[in-house]
Length: 74
Image 1 (cartoon, rainbow, N blue to C red):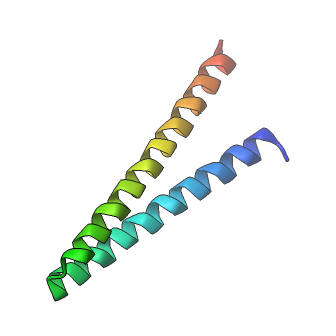
Image 2 (tube, rainbow, N blue to C red):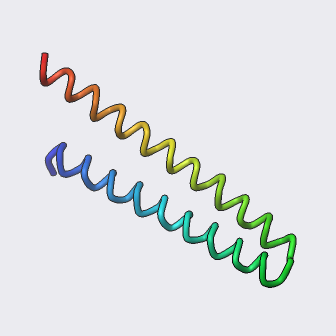
């Protein structure tokens, strides 16, 4: 598999995981507002923290792409 294809797959997977966590945060918050259940709020916070990890991964992918772009341009 080519490097470009691998990078694109990692990007898609990272974005997909980020969106899954975002949906989970939304679902937990809706449940919290409906039920006033503190466990749902805790679950939302956990999903949010996981989502931040995926945001960090996405940032790393972007930084790597920028570095490759600068090397190619040089």
